[in-house]
Length: 435
Ligand SMILES: [Zn+2]
Image (cartoon, rainbow, N blue to C red):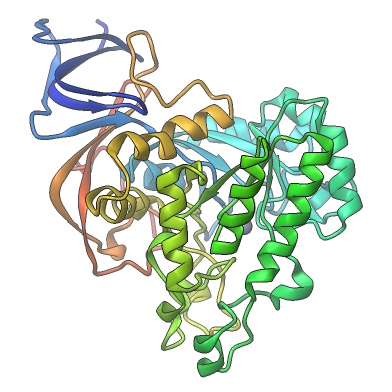
């Protein structure tokens, strides 16, 4: 018998419309009907009267330490964490050990993900061999093996001639090129934003120019060589200004930011708080405001999770030695919903656009929609229920968060991946992983 689920009376949001009080019928892996008053027998019914239904979230920026480190986030735990946060498709940065820089490793990652990750996982291939920023990787081979984009992850290519050659070489492949912008001769291994808080704490900071000098170089090269450039986690007002200028001049560049950059500023590092140690660092309140504004007016196309989990031991050390990154899958949506939609800066449609439709479009994944015949990748959340963040309960192996202890709005209730239902109230659905 075919598995059927009927979602009744929900409010459906896509990137371009809102549909009130309609039912969605899922059969096997697909959405087969969207209508009012659907009545079928032998199916499971979910009453979504007070709930919002959106296309499953699609993430563009995540680092999973698998293969490589068994004690860190694995594909299994990353998938569970993603689904708990409403993400149905995730990506994976290539700057791992071993680096995802050839066809054999791409195939290995894809088959491992298929067996172990409950969310769809599409890997990124590297731009350069071992993400070392020198020799070009086997991009054509990796595209045939199924990578959705090419990127050196959180490593920035310092040599401009390598970037130029990459842009020329990639014009054959029609693959987005994703770059983290950091001039390492300026960033000082960027622990914190250069400024008053860094001085107060006695920590060497990363200036805004560590990001913008590199960004400007990549924008200019992309324009000259007609590259499909996508900029990761924009953190500064000046970066927004530069990208706005290039877009106005007709550049096809796209960009993303991540929750920490539109919610937290450098003061979060007071007390040597390693939980907010990220690269690039969180900046000033003016930067936060500029990023919110750029999300509103469309200069920033995408919100990615920037899920970058490590072990708690890596955070319980001196600030200089602590690892970079936030365990973000289980907070990204609620942070964005609370601070952007509930706060009045974005509409629900804009949020769906930035967290599902546009990432899918940039990566050519054919996701991010709710339509008859489409794959049943959905997320259902309660917009009115308070979400108390308790990081100790994360499905991720990285059970820490700079948002720990806060109360947000927007609780994920159900995530559907290819029609398979994950019920957040039912702990059996997401089996707690071994410690
Ligand atoms: Zn990065």
